[in-house]
Image (cartoon, rainbow over all chains, first blue to last red; front, side, top):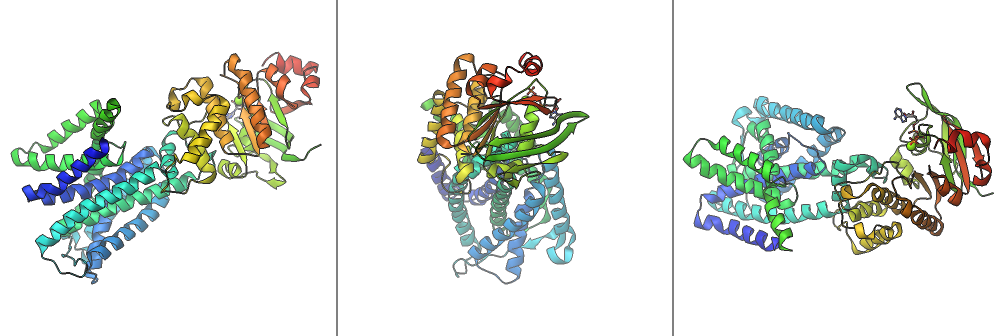
Amino acid sequence: MRAILLIVAILAIVAAPMAAPWLQFVLTMAVAKGLAALGVAVLLRAGMISIGHAMFVAASAYGVAFLARAGIADFGLLLVLSVVITGLAGAVVGAFLIRYRAIFFAMLNLAVSMVFYALFAKLYGVTGGTDGMTIPVPTVFGIVLSEPTFKAVLFYGSVALMVVVGLAVHRYLDSPLGHALSAVHTNEVRLEYLGVPVWAVLLVAYVVSAVLAGLGGAIAGFAIGRVVPDFAFWTASGHLVLVAVLGGIGGVPGAFIGAFFLELLHTEAAAFTDAWNLIVGAALIGVIMFLPKGLYGLLTRSEVSAK
Amino acid sequence: MSASILQVRDLHVEFNGVKAADGVSLDINEGEFLAVIGPNGSGKTTLLNLCTGYVRPKSGSIHLDGRAITGLTPRAITRRGVARAFQIPQLFSDQSVLDNMMLALAAKDGLWTMVRPLAEPARREEATALLDLVGLRDDKNRVSRTLPEGHRKLLDIAVALALKPRLLLLDEPTSGVSTLERFSLMEALMSALRTRNITALFVEHDMDVVARYANRVLVWNAGTVMAQGHPDEVFKDERVLKNVVGVA
Ligand SMILES: Nc1ncnc2c1ncn2[C@@H]1O[C@H](COP(=O)(O)OP(=O)(O)OP(=O)(O)O)[C@@H](O)[C@H]1O
Ligand SMILES: [Mg+2]
């Protein structure tokens, strides 16, 4: 039942831009933010809140910009390399931060992300400062595309990536390593007494979360055609936490549901009113009070009662 | 006499002036079921904390199979074949009883797969068999947080057994377990230990359980071993009767 709903939802996403072309950009950005929010949600499993994951979104997008400047033009290669760079950054940052818990973990992620932000903004000669860097239209399998064609390729590629990556993350969370990650939240002492190296479980999770944020960042960079320091600003990190909690961390679809919901709401609300923050705030209050498992909890709940 | 697998020599540790271990020396011999009895606060749990690396001794040494394990982490000591069940059960309270078991089994031999699910058929079967053994079959799908205290103790013991240890340390396995279930638990435990060649030490307050199952008893008092020997002899000792059995 749930699988059918998800398939219908994906088909609807794929078809939407045919009816309303302006949706293509909005939905591409929703996929990008959903991937990054999924990264945050992975860490939330262990009860660890990162208010800094936008740094990996930005790192990846800047990675694409630098690599493009260095002469790499292939879409796939840019995507893979920038994500590898982000994974390495995640391993380095994670190695320091996974020792901390609760508010210390949250704040240290924030602190490191602000360092990233400052570097991107201040190293004018390298990063273009607050003007950012442009991300040119890449070639796809050696073919030079017009911008509109590339944006369409990017959209369908992103949706495909969302499905593949979503399934992979689902597998990871359902594996012993994924269950060990949730166990960090409930009982680290028992984990140690099972002979499990908690640091390694967390480091894997941190790198996975950074890679997911990196994927989102690369897609966002390609979609916008530019990367600016604001990609790494703390409000962007906060937004990812918001998306993850709003969608629900009970399963992989949650992050994407949250992202699509917010992106569409934002576009719609912005057209009628400037009370966008009010609406988002009210939606979040509603979800936290009535749907502790997020919007995705609605789906899983109907599943249970259907049994 | 069989070989000693754990040798504890002259351990000292104190907390804010309270000597929880005050020159403790003891041996655990291969294949035995060793009981530790003693009044509340005498340092029995501390002994387990020391042997598993949770607490570091101020001085003294601990050897497992002749190799020093003093100062190693609980994780490293667990990896060498020492498992522990706790006085207060240490469970993954948000996860199901079955998941608790399967995670323990996976920790022993297959944590590092990100592709295959935790609930592989073979692992699920093994977990169910262990739950059967301790009498938790009907609780299999319950979230472990919702179990009554006695069943949480049973699960904690089953989790320790899942690690296939050589040496099992049990902290009051029967406390919180109803008198009705107490002896069936002990019978199941004894047969599991025998068939799996597990040596065990258990802290116990129930003297009937000690008298019936232990091969040897260590009497603990104020951080030292006050007496030791076969249950029959130890329970005749005047000092033991006065200090421990009467109090415990
Ligand atoms: N981590 C610790 N920090 C401070 N004091 C401790 C610590 N662990 C144990 N103690 C103290 O050491 C003494 C021995 O405690 P321990 O828990 O080992 O006793 P016990 O024999 O297991 O008691 P019980 O029968 O109540 O379980 C007590 O006075 C206790 O308060
Ligand atoms: Mg105790």
